[in-house]
Length: 340
Ligand code: ADP
Ligand code: MG
Image 1 (cartoon, rainbow, N blue to C red):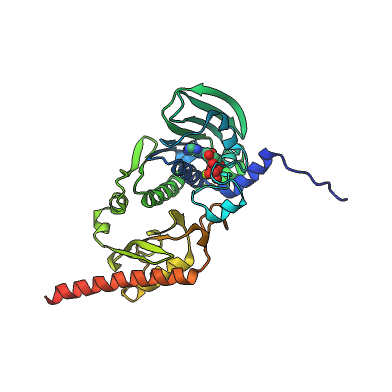
Image 2 (image 1 turned 90 degrees about the horizontal axis):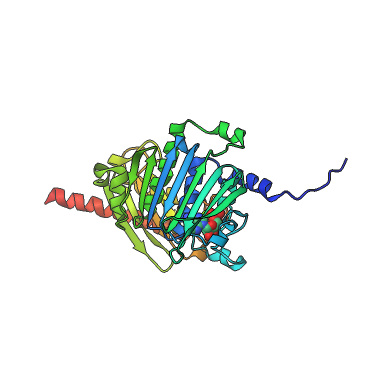
């Protein structure tokens, strides 16, 4: 028997999208922080309870959302960041799909409070499983506070697949650390329950953030590299072999201020490092690559953690050369010190 074709209602399709965008608490944290950054926040506080399963609360001092736009923020494909298809090829914001809030809202209980600087009062919205419960005027500070309660309460299968609370917390910590590294000009605070586990100060200096996260000893083993040409800016730190590790945990790549995983770029750094290393371990590195948005496709993966360069050969080359040169200079410096 031929079955009739249905068009899914929005709540159902949001739940399906949630399967891709919100895999676990850490992905919710990532999406919500990216929204704060897109809203030009300078201070972002993240509070987490039970590995993010009972509460993820994020407070920012960004632009806020207009009271009559607030329901829209939770509708599929609703975004303030792009207007039409031409914008897709030159994305400057972290978000653009308009998928995160509706997806998260469909699998949790959300309270959002938001206030724009130019308005006298803010607005509060409660949503459960994607359905708006109530909307009220409220007094709150400029910016946005979003509380995600009981994540996956209505999708037990998802909940079952989560790891222990401490494992989920460490994944959250990891993503927050990486975003903090990427945005030294923003102050981040992360709380696990009442315990503060991260506080960066928004000084604008990358090395300040690295000291906070990795400690002074590690930072003494870092070599800075930097190079610019017409198309690419490449900069960051490569660790001396003393701080190489058995895993790739201490490697971060940011392309146009977006944390990404890219095998080719990783290989570019690792290959440059190889000839200076006597141990078979993975180097510590923080790599920033910046280029014209038109030359990078961030639209190949729903969570945007993978990217594609129009010309990855040139990208590979400049990264390899820059890191190689920095290590070469360091060897030379050490050598000159030794013989003088
Ligand atoms: P996207 O980020 O792809 O636009 P989201 O679903 O994450 O989609 O968010 C939808 C919209 O809600 C955003 O485009 C933005 O206008 C608004 N928004 C979400 N979070 C914030 C925030 N913290 N501050 C200001 N506006 C926000
Ligand atoms: Mg977003």
